[in-house]
Image (cartoon, rainbow, N blue to C red; front, side):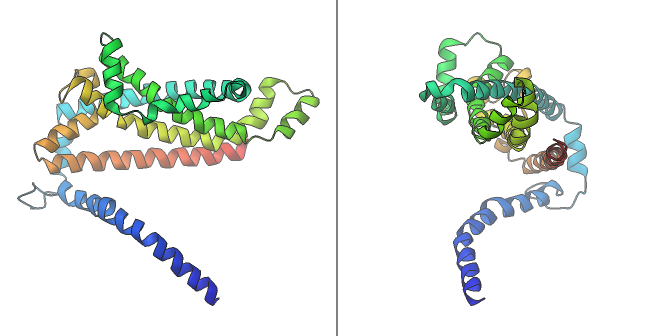
Length: 265
């Protein structure tokens, strides 16, 4: 019992620096955003209830940024996951013959955004803005999903696959009854990760098109950045809170779906 208590104390001491860092850089600012969302401005902290939310939801540029962000997310996410699944399965079946190909797919995610933008402007400057961001997103972030799905595929028990083949199972049946149940958790994790990554396209968008880009690629982060430069913390905090709770609800629903789907397979 004494040894167990000592071990617990050591674990707490090891985690303490991380907990302090998370508190300083995430928890405290997040709680501070609540205050700004319900006060008049940074200099006048009068409590205004839901006035900031009403003004935000009637703001034309905010609604435009939300619409574009949602469109980009709903287009980029399924395309990225579908492409990643196809490439991961191909690498699982034939990639062992060319080992360096696997690491090549992960390379774009470690490239600086400036490098990506310079390459894009050099060869694809005439591509429409929305298509440009979509292709850059696929090129940069699909590699991570490919590696995750490929890792899950490699963990599938080959003895089960061989036994099923002996029993006469075809390729489709093997995938649906053996492979798919094993990779469902990874697919849902990749789905959540891809949705999160769609909010990270701001750097490339900003470097390509500046603070006020074409209307088709004016994203939520463009809106937040523009209001941050104006020190409009109330607007930023209100928008951030709305999207935080929206994403939290979406992720919670997906995790629940993942559990139900895993249990049914």
